[in-house]
Length: 221
Length: 221
DNA sequence: TTTGACTCTAATGTTAACAGTTAACATTAA
DNA sequence: TTAATGTTAACTGTTAACATTAGAGTCAAA
Picture 1 (cartoon, rainbow over the protein chains, first blue to last red):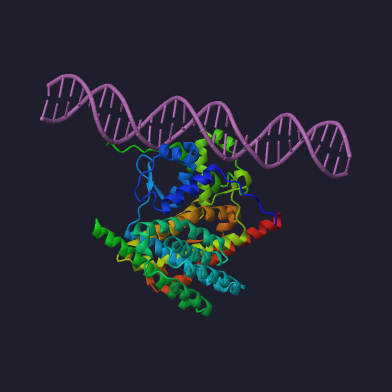
Picture 2 (cartoon, chains in turn brown, cyan, blue, orange):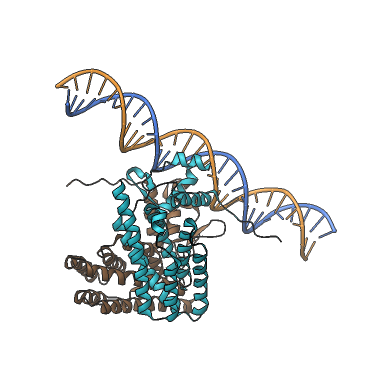
């Protein structure tokens, strides 16, 4: 099979590298990023790095301070709630649209696949968060609405930061494939109201988990 | 009175200038943008311009072709439908959240203000589209959820391009303040289902208008 | 007519250096 | 001692130049 070869620019490598560093916690929330240090660390020039940073800025992973100084975004409890409110609305729409597709059986199969992966990696914290996000991303992909996926992706960075801030271990405690099983089952049954309720509940619980982690870390400090 | 001086970087000026050029139709859909030409036109270096372009790329106003060549995004009928589907979901959420705020009366007042402007400019095409977007943006602002506004803004560029492609005159024909009056009235009455239905209808009609404009221009060509 | 090698050009990718600004520290004078 | 004023170091804003590559065009040989 002949595929398009992918050309990878330094800028894109920086982008991926930075994103990974942030979402893995190597660069923690609030940390100030110095262009000169980073460009040296990546072995690229400042101009190249800056383009990547501008992108991350708009993705919501970085925020600009008064003098243009970029730092890793910190997300408080209120913002977390707001983000998940939007996220929920998007995924509810995704579920409804998926259901309305003529080939929804096939699309559901993709979702079941993502679910299977989620079960497979149960126990591995790093993999589990990836599998979880993958499941929800798949839901948006299979909605048949690319704009919906794009919009969801614009929230993904912020979601990852929230999880990272809450602490991987805390965030994932009580988080299992079972809950996602419920979503797929509900989707299969196909009652729109039921689907919405199930997703609302799923998200509400996720927020509660993350917020509680915030509070215990508040107590620590 | 001594005020804080407004610090405006060249990058941000380029950003605004480019956005304006695109959404005003000076740069038409599909047009290829050459860095060297633009940087010369703006009187800035390529590096500075590139940062602005990267941002517009992620805003969805520009798309990158092979070898990184950026051109003004063209939106087809299918994409238009997808975008408005997401937009509708966001605004429905905004309306529901606005309604749930403790000071929703005050927030509704802001919306009425935007409505008044819409009535005031009736007739002036350029102003009308601005007032229309302003109304819907205000709805998101007054939802009390900043993340919702941010997400909506990430669609605004694409929406403007759609309108521009459809042609200002065609897009705005049949578009009146009356229809927005209905939204506010429904919001005031406060029945969630009714609010959703009204917004759905509003958007469905908007898409129909825009798509019909596409088709007549298809016939022209 | 087509293929292949070659050149040339135009555009983006990338870099290094310069300029301006801020914040912290050192110095001086009252 | 302290408050005002140099002074310096660090960082971002900005630029100009160099590197690389896709694409068009040319031309000769099969």
